[in-house]
Length: 136
Image (cartoon, rainbow, N blue to C red; front, side, top):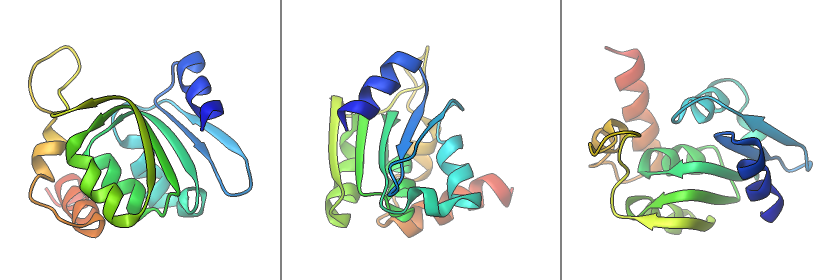
């Protein structure tokens, strides 16, 4: 995981994924967009992968677990993500553990965290997010 964390910092990217074959891929989209893209079009890259992300809230944790990741590092990790990761047996580590994920340049709570607040499982999280994004 140290290698992924180093890349996350050095490349100033949003997500780094090492798949089960050891291939490392760097992503740069904001928020959970890269995880969304991976779940929609490249799920095998997540299955068994180790990931390092700038921010892991409950939404990102649910998406990562749903995708079958092995381990997660969050530069910032929300306490609301812990039950999702623990229940799935996903190894995790973090730079900073926070009570609430807030939007960049604001003190407002992340809207995705609000949307998935009542969700209990990774499946519920992903379904709720997809409904929010695609069924408006």
